[in-house]
Length: 427
Image 1 (cartoon, rainbow, N blue to C red):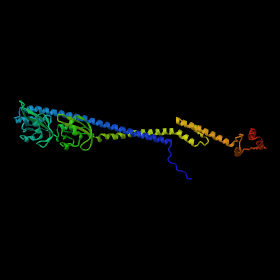
Image 2: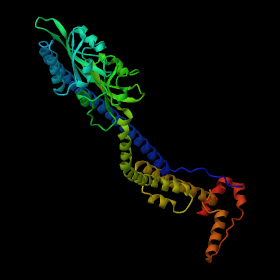
Image 3: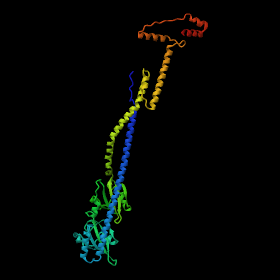
Image 4: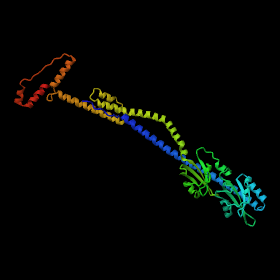
């Protein structure tokens, strides 16, 4: 009959190693995942806060710049109120304001009827005497207060924002306004302040007005465009300062910090792509894996040694249990070093069972070779003893006794008396 094929045999050592390996893998994966999530959130929180602080600082600088520029226009308005009919004096004053600190790309004076009286720099003086119809001019003439206009195309076809201050005479009569323009698509102090960016992590800054129109952006082609599909910009006029994680109008997930410029109604947003923020985390996790790999190897070797140490007593006891019918099994079981409770109990049970088994086998063997009535060896015992002596080559003699007329004893006195006779004879 062919032998049946044995399947995969699993012993305790293998099971311990598998269990320890699975536990180690699960724990490592869990720790790496938890570390990744925590570190990722820390990076995100740090980037959000850094962008908020950066946006707030630049918004504050912009607010200070606007206040300083309006202060220059305030003083210029008081000077020009005394020389509104003197074209040369007006031109000198506009030249002075333009050259003072280089805050504006151009400066000008417009009377109460919207007529341009003076303008600097010189290439724009051909516009003097022209009635200004731009949205910024109309807004300043209508509001008659210090004002930061919304972006518009100037008479020179420049996209500009105008800072203006009204001119009143000593009697409080409105005479017009003095203004300074910032060319949004050309270099000026405001662009220099906003564009001075030292980060190399993909972050950038942009400025929008209350109508969601870009006033500043690293991509100059987008300046003047209206941003659609950006939840932060849609709500920016109702916010003051904070952070937000969102998807921008270009479909990129970003981390944004924002602040507002109250005097102008502008919003300053500093943002950084989320992917750029979390990119260092991938190399960090790889470094952690590389550093922990040798420790994991040492731990695996230690687990293997522990598994061997734990399984060895049980393996030796199992081997002893398989060979209980062999000579010397009890000695081998006694030599097993059962150093923990379960192995010690199993060893004790095996030794007890082996002793009990040997005792019962010995009793059965005696019963099989002994006459139960007299306690003497029977024919099987005789044959075994003779064959043993013959095998050992020893000289021996055998005496055979026969009881004459024993049947009469049983017939005349009964079997009980016959049994007593046999026992007395055996003694």
